[in-house]
Image 1: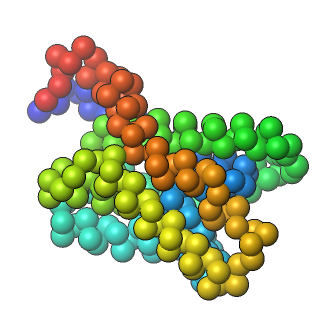
Image 2 (image 1 turned 30 degrees about the horizontal axis):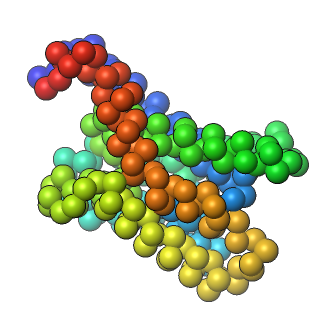
Length: 222
């Protein structure tokens, strides 16, 4: 069993990490250099379906949650439910807030927001995954494949999952009538960077920041 202070740390890391991860998507959207791979899929669906972004996010996450329930219930927890019901609406709200706060941005500002989004998202993802109180529905896919089914390494499986999301997102964007001039809302250099480096960066942050934050010198580790 975990000590009480250990569980408090897990709760703070889980909910704080998921909240910050959702907020980081707003930086990607404002930068307009492409969003992370899972958000690319959601953006494509947003273009193709007559539903709000928050509702689309909820429905897609619910579908993945059903897969997770049958594959490995271990990854379902309080954090999963938080992500399922709130993350899409938080992203929707924070993106609108940034658009009001910074209506116009220079190229340098957009690049800065992109870098900030990548670093913040990977760090926040590492924090809430390490907390182990349930991960986001999408993150559970790569974790189930690598840690439950023992197929490949996390960083490589994550790259494959990300690539599939981007391909589907772009296809749906154009099926929904999207134009090349607006493709930055779905895919771009930011998507490419996150598709190839998000897995390795999350693994790096878990080892060097998230796990030391949770376990200290390792003596608390279960």
